[in-house]
Amino acid sequence: MIVRKKLYRLAIALGCLVSVAAFAEEIGSVDTAFVFLGANHKIVIEAFDDPKVPGVSCHLSRAKTGGVKGTFGIAEDTSDASIACRQTGIITLPQEIQSKKSDGERVFRESTSLLFKHMQVVRFYDVKRNTLIYLTYSDKLIDGSPKNSISTVQITNSIFEK
Image 1: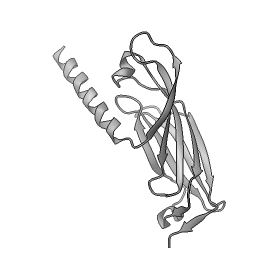
Image 2 (image 1 turned 120 degrees about the vertical axis):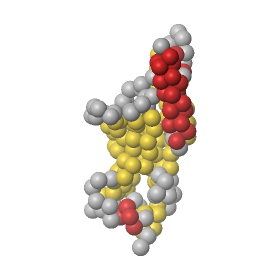
Image 3 (image 1 turned 90 degrees about the horizontal axis):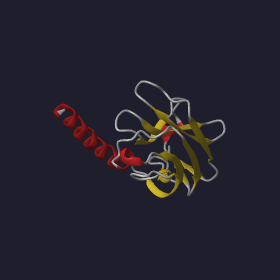
């Protein structure tokens, strides 16, 4: 019983640390299901700017579990998410992105469970079409998730670093 309490406290502390690491700005949310005790289940809309590509902003919508566990941040959110990215200014495309091959680069990561599960956004650059591609997906330490969504940004007004 004592070990269980210590693990529970450790898990809450880790959850607090992980939530601080996220850099998305919550824009709003809608309730999707009423929960008698604790917060309702909802869909949250968050915004973030690509940290390495000035001039690109993304909006991510994702499910957030409510109830008592959700209120205390220990519930596991579902893997449902959608993303939309747009050019919001002059794009400055760093050389490292121009030369990067097909493996992509993570630009956003947020915990969606107490341990091991994260919602991630990875950026790819399609040289031939001069387009940035943003992929969102959920991972889990043991099982990958096939649920994903993409958004593309056609670069029309840009500065290419040399």
